[in-house]
Length: 82
Image (cartoon, rainbow, N blue to C red):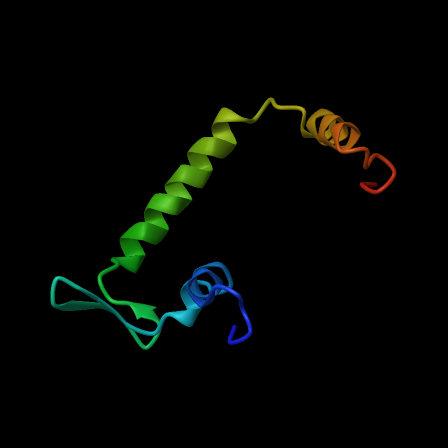
């Protein structure tokens, strides 16, 4: 990034959350050594699993092959997605 014309923009646009080791918010460390500290992982995992189950049940009758074909056609990729 040293050769970038705009180092600040390069820092923002060419990095990701994994490049951040520490975050301090209101004098409290909320990310340390690249790991979030204030996340209740078991609860979050359960909420995500429940959400996936609910979405799966609400889309049971959906014809996914038709949707894949329509998306492939709209992107001119019918011959690529087989």
